Image (tube, rainbow, N blue to C red; front, side, top):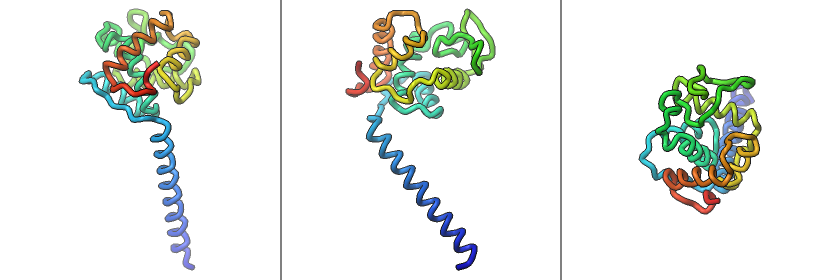
Length: 176
């Protein structure tokens, strides 16, 4: 067998192996992540959701975090969001790496929505949150435990649930 034939065979098998892994991963995601359907016309909520997906969050987790951003900003209408490009009410990080450009009104400022999402990604991974939570309630309990918000857990959960219903079609896994 010629050397080029061997290289072609290795490449071909490697390609098939990669495709097989991708298909298996897609099947795993489909099985473990029920479909998410956005029903909102709110462009910012849509942008947040798709930016979270682009950072590697699962559709289910991106849904929870988008609802959280909606709650934090009052449907993306707060002064902190509008003037700071801060959709999570994040404070300026002093210890961890950050994409923030400064601080205004006691909250981090960002050049745009994407840099805010990138900073949230750094925060999320820095605290080693789970890649997936079984319910919004479980996710809210986890961020409360880390001191992310000061309100009562039930109050924060109710606020996030409100925006889940505003932005997404309800599914059994999204309740609670």
